[in-house]
Length: 434
Image 1 (cartoon, rainbow, N blue to C red):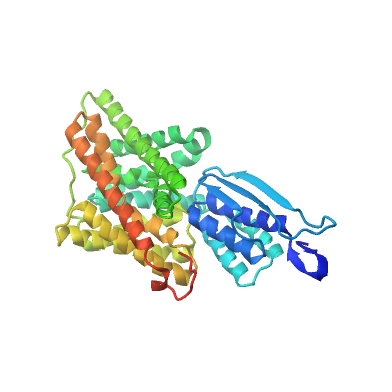
Image 2 (image 1 turned 30 degrees about the vertical axis):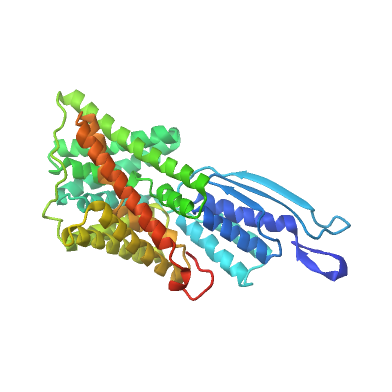
């Protein structure tokens, strides 16, 4: 039992047990990709409902410190007077289905539909929730690579080559890099394998635009979760965690750039000359709005699977991704706006739609934002920056790098502005799932 009897026959939840349950919920959230503000909010919501005042938790990007002192202590020793716990939480694969499940549990607790015993049992069930099956993640990685090849200008043959590279990339990650390599070495080698397979397909005659093949192939490696969460944490004044996660995201981009560069240098050493690429191209086969919408939907859907989103949210995530990309294309093609300005507008739309979708689905808006924002992430800029520097075209490399940074800043501003809008615009409830 998690209750103890105090003087005057008053029953209160056991202080230590409440903090343990709250800490366990925070542990699940943090290791599966939740932003820090959500972790803190849910932990405080659980503890407050069971009679323990909030303010007992200090949360970092990879750890939770829990401590406190009970206000009421049974004289016979029925309840601990103090509690302290430190939990190190390593970075693991993102599983948004678990984040959503804990989020819903916290609201069930607040509504009085779940006692402490039931909360502990449900947390154990959430921890055992299965990840997406191997074949589903394999197909998702392959299709997302193909889709983003089209998004960034590739034709149908380029998409096919990117799909092959994405498939081999996931097999390599699953059987090799995730099991036997450190995170940095794995990041570089993953990008190297994706780029090398893309070059091989291109040299065998499959695909016409090598740049679009490589961009599509490396998109599944883009660190979307730490990038988005870092922005959210900074917007919530969690500066230490925000900078830590943005540094983690930047490290991911650097690993991709190194892997791409090494693959091109190896090809140059084998064939005696560096591959000459002519810059950004758009194949008319996939340049129309219809195929761009299809590609954006498939690409977003692929990331919902990769990040373990519940199947019931696939459609909403895909629609949000399409809406953001269509807004971007219209701003660029019809309003002649620059890529950073168009990215700002599209990011605003994605975040606003995500907040609207979060309320009826009882799902964090983060789930929709992270998956939908991938159409705007400057994956092409990372590739061209790497290529130009490797081929000693430093002026073009610096230009591509600065453009990628400006697009990234525009996305950051779009997320920050959209998340600052008052919640009453999206829900009548005082507290919602955003």
